[in-house]
Image (tube, rainbow, N blue to C red; front, top):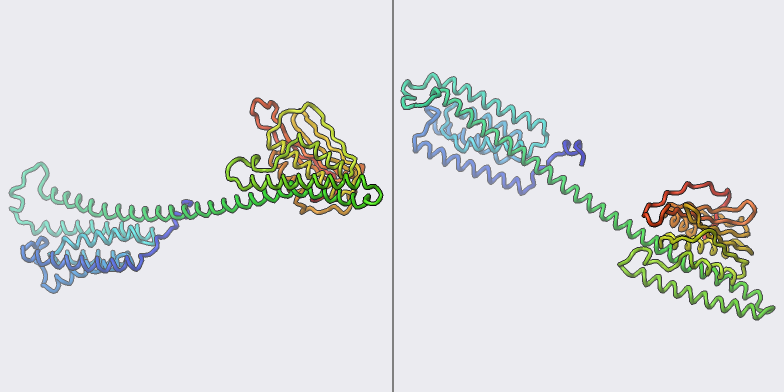
Length: 443
């Protein structure tokens, strides 16, 4: 929460239960004040001078204490009534001062703790305290005239008796009003901090819920990508092989039998990989690389061999000195190649397929080209292309996919490598190069 929000916060009003408690509190203080008034009469403790009539004493006692029944509902109004009645009662020499003083303390505290308008609450409290000290000065000025000559006969000290009395009164009143102001402000700050903690806890709960939703969505995307990579490739190969088998069934039974054998092997491989992947997806431990279907650059040759079995003239070339690759990079390169080969089988109508793996100074790349058709392959929403881009971008690589200048289609993925594999230095992101113009092939 910002400072502006915090300063603009208003404490919620009292609950119905708190209002009922205030009623009982005000009635209890009023009853105790009446008891204190009776005791003062019984002891003859008329400290402020000759008291007024009995009904007037009752009136001032009730006027100072009874407004506390509304102290949290209308704190400012309660303080004004209590302070005015308090000064008037002292001016009339009402003998009850004990509970009346604590009623004034409670009213001051309540404005500080519950006043909705902080500027008004601050000004009102300061104004009431200043008025009380002004009234104290007036009281001392009037009382000096009526002090008997022998009032301080037993006084013994370095400070003049009258000065000592006035300083003592100022100190006591200063502590009285200072504590009322301080405790009221502290209560309001505590309520504000409690509100902030609740708001932060609610924000944390929302963040955790959003994080859980993002985790679920990410897991769904990962599962969808793995299902696409594992199943779609093998099913596409089986479809191409079945089509070839149908065409040569009557003319060349030997080729048809070979195609059926390849279909059977591909189906078994697809089922094995699917079962392995589903089993690993059910586990809760391990890294993402451990929970995905196996595949790395060393198995790219198997993809090329399957393309040959499906009837394509497929070649594989490895250029440069192979270097150890991180498992995730090796798997990403394999999946990109697998998707590109699958797209060639499904969409291209190609006869030639060329797969090249290059190990360069700062990067490793896989390059898949074919001589298939370009038209009719546009579908920017294809899951295969999206999956390839996600895999490559996850490793700060660059993916290029589009038609070749000489005809056909090209998919090239470049993965940055660390300058020194033993140093642990992270690879630098590659600069993307513009892809060839034209439609993009989808899965």
